[in-house]
Amino acid sequence: ISFMLDTTVRDADHMEASDAVPQVVRVMRTHSDKPDVLRAAVNCLVSLTEGNRHAVQQLRSNSADVVALLDAAMQLHLAADILFALGRIYYAVFGVAGLLEALVRDTLRGAPQRVALLQVLGKYAEEAEVDSLLQLGAVRRVCDAMAAEPKVAAAGIAALGRLCEFFLVGGIEAAGLPGCQDATMSQKFANEVEQGIETVVLRLEAETKQRKPDVFI
Image (cartoon, rainbow, N blue to C red; front, side, top):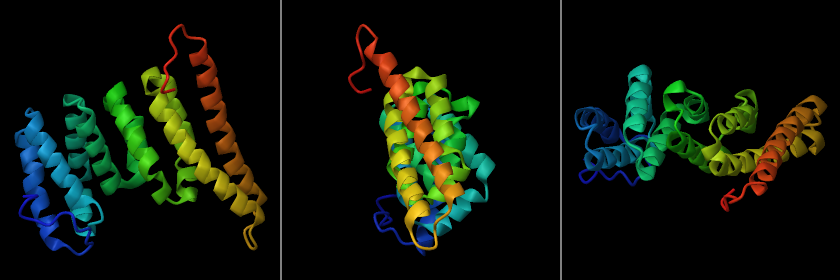
């Protein structure tokens, strides 16, 4: 399917792509136990959904089934590239909110799954509205994921760094730009940055006390 369609073109009106989505989903369901087939299907679905509103709407209309399919694939296959691609589908279909919900879902508690979701969050968070990240409690959810699974610390710190960067910029704009001098909002941004930095510093202090510190952290 990916060979027949020019899935490299991010066309929001590419109807052919949305027509192919059910076929790819069917392949994922039928061959979920075959890593090579699943990898090809998942990568194809990434290409079909990113930037294509028709394909995204089609998947959103069956959101419960799609979430169950993605969760099952993430539980069954632990290859980093497959997990990252599945995380990209989560983001393409459900946005940052979907990523954050998946991050705290009981079915995706494993370190490989949470690392992949955090990596996708760190990569695409800048595309989200900073106000939305604030309302969704993005920093708190990442901190909770790090507390629940120590092995995700490196990916969590990277994601927190990106989030703190956006909140810092948002706070400066809320405090200083004409028409945006909102002290309450500025303080909310500051609180998010403080929580993120505090979590990173505490994790760094704990790691430096280890006999063999993790160089990635």
